[in-house]
Length: 172
Image (cartoon, rainbow, N blue to C red):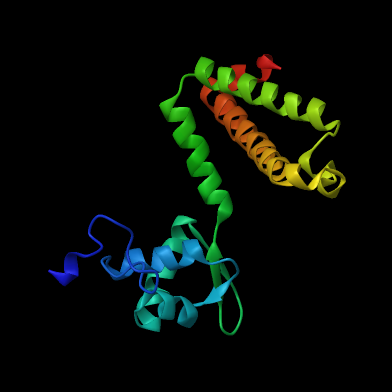
């Protein structure tokens, strides 16, 4: 019965991939990496042999999921461009061109609202320490939401263009 303690919740922090097969554990280790790692480092995180990690990493590199950096030893990192491409394709598949355009418009309105509120072109242009101490948490939350809106608008616009095909350039 003790084995069922985390059945409905997240796995223990020390072993987040324990119920997955080796291929999934290697995938998870690469996705969570913040910088290039060697196959041995990934194997350690994925709780598998270095050779097994190398085999799966080669497979993921062929698919474009992982970038392999030549060297001794070689380094591996997730390919953020692949995941962005995947997200854009998913948006284009799940939504119509009109739905994507409506979302771009909503996000543009939110971005413009933040620009007006903070009298700045981007979140990076806002000097948080110029605000009263009791408001700083709200300002940071707004800046995070603003940055997210900018990124989401970019992805939705890209998906809209992809979904619209050659006619997308006429949208302006």
